[in-house]
Amino acid sequence: MNNNFIAPTIFTFNLLLSLLVLSSCSGQTSKESQTLHNEDFGWTITIPEDFVNVSPEEWKKMQNKGLDAIENTYGEEVVNQSKIVFVFKNADFNYMESNYQPFDTQIDGDYLESWSGVNEIVFETFRSQMPNARIDSISSVEKVSGLDFHTFKIKIDFPNGMIMHSLMYSRLFDKKEFSLNIIYVDEKQGEKMIDAWFNSRFE
Image (tube, rainbow, N blue to C red; front, side, top):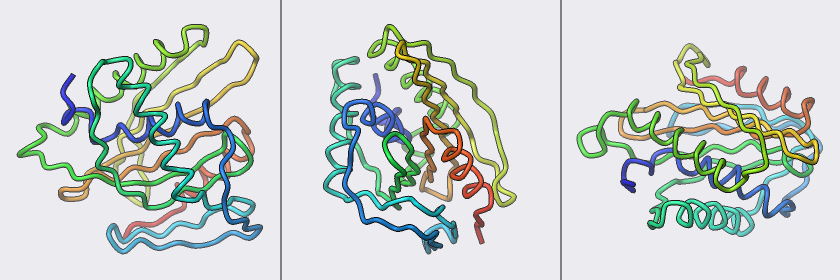
């Protein structure tokens, strides 16, 4: 396994697996929707009401859980270079997270090859870590604010009847890979996050 190869989107896996092992995170409660603007990407998004901001300390714990699972599966250390834009949650298992990482095609290689390779690693690691769950995935390209985003969607059916959805959206902005990740078990909350994402704007 090439650590540089999987680095660009591995944070998404940390998020999804970590939710299974750390189901409760503290955060600052906010009943009202809030609009955020990120200067790095000229991005504006309105976070739905009743979502709370997850503390950096709790999120760090979740990152470490996810990294451990990948390292245990592949037997190699993974270097995490991601920078958090935000993390919000509603109840347990309904999360919206954004991050970015450096990605230079002159150093890291072809972006689409890297994206496809990471998706395969994510899928296979879940199969290894959750042998009793049914896992389906699909890849596509979707437009947000007129920009193409590479999309990888995972659906996990657990033996206890819980269904978890993961939606990963990524694209390159110069030498930075931007990612927006949505994970949910509550369909209503999932729709809120998806609507917020598709109604967001990049200037």
